[in-house]
Length: 257
Image (cartoon, rainbow, N blue to C red; front, side):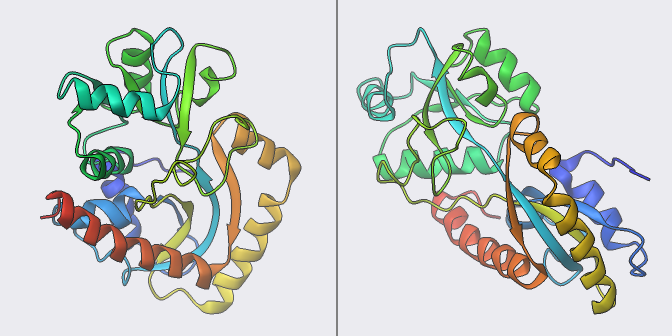
């Protein structure tokens, strides 16, 4: 049974999971925001690491920095330089204020010593609407990725360690010289204290599902997600490392509480 509990940048659902029984019958699908971002910005009713059992990572979201095809910018460098010449005039949007994409662009602007205006929206759907309607100059997120091959938008860079197979001509931010923190994962967790034998069993069955070609195809084409497997221990290590590193970055940008 799937019980969708949206709201609060994922905090409502994750908090409900933290209070559930640890018998192994209640698990949650987790993204980075309620675990490694929000706890640095405001108080949450759970500990982002200690209150959960990490089962398995199954993917990373594809995020691309995009502009409309009829825009004057052919490269990220051109967009940056135009931002420098026209301080405070260029705009961009992300899935929401203090989302990982928003924080990433804040770091980019700080590194380049430029000022670009963030236009807040409520989620990916609204972000796509304002961008395709020409109300913002650029976006960073996953929603616009299907529009790159179709020719509606131009991808200038992807937030990943390597290029996406479906966007082989779009460079990565690291390729362009940017190596800011970008926590990006999705996976399964449970309340703290789940029996290790149950964790192992859940990990095995989810790994089998992840290896199914139809699921991998769904991830890429529908969910804009790159399939990526990490076992329980490796997944927790990535989450802990991201939580600590992002805390440092948020303090530098003045966004941390």
